Length: 170
Image (tube, rainbow, N blue to C red):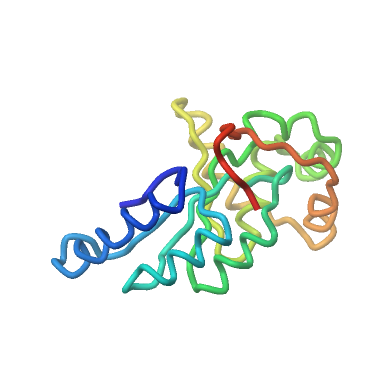
């Protein structure tokens, strides 16, 4: 179970204690959250009786989420990266294209491989096409070297795909 898109601290303070009850009753093994900021994670630490298992966040080469990723990792939790190809924006980034050409693959696979190169990060690409699903799976076989990762890490463009007006980000 995962509280999704917390709009106000009061929602976090209402929802997370309910998860403690579900865990205590054996109905839930782990608690994950979605789109939590570092401040939200601090509140979760105070409210949960169990360690946080994951924070699902938008993450891709154009939004690497370094500080938030570090905060999640410091809790021994996982980052679950949604919108891993930035809704197609990675196809327009020359650094990703260069790495893709070097490996003979497309930018989507490079973006997924880059995500998987990050400690404690799992990617959840969305696809309905069997060919894209297979392609996404094959991204695990791409071996980005340190130069490739540094090249992508060095991208200075920031692009957020999901940005509701009421959301406050880190």
